[in-house]
Length: 217
Image 1 (tube, rainbow, N blue to C red):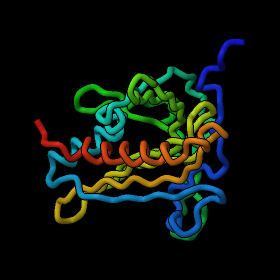
Image 2: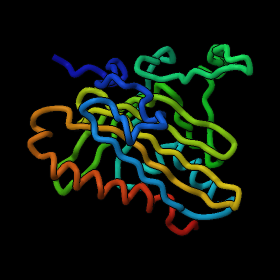
Image 3: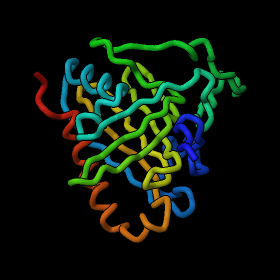
Image 4: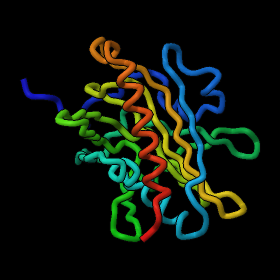
């Protein structure tokens, strides 16, 4: 039987959008390990522009040694995505703005920016082994001084859960990266090597921060 295309799959966990929760570190989804790290990656306009554009075009992953294989998928593919609820001044919920659903946004160098519903497979080489990690973009943050996205895992990923990458700029011009996640191994074979999986995760996270803090050329 042919393998099902990743864009046809739904995420393999239930707490979709959970990385937005302010109390994630205290009350993570049951059975999942929460993680959060925030670090200053630079200062100034150039660093800010570089950081958020790299973040919203899979630059963090690519510059950390991953091969990012983005899949073409129909525009109606939004299963597994998360649209946060917003409210007006009277407390009434505001319907999501759908005017940009089919809009493709590009960066200064012509790179395509991530959009909710995008599907990709991250391929990480560890020695002679290639680990494949299919994922779905759950939400995108696009504010004047805060930008980023989160992806959720799809069947076939070594883990189950969600990971968010958010860059923000403070009033003094400092630029920061925050990585938040909750995860657990997705199958028994990954539980069997969980200590090794944790070590790989730690190494990859260090690469994430270096990918945005390296000197600009």
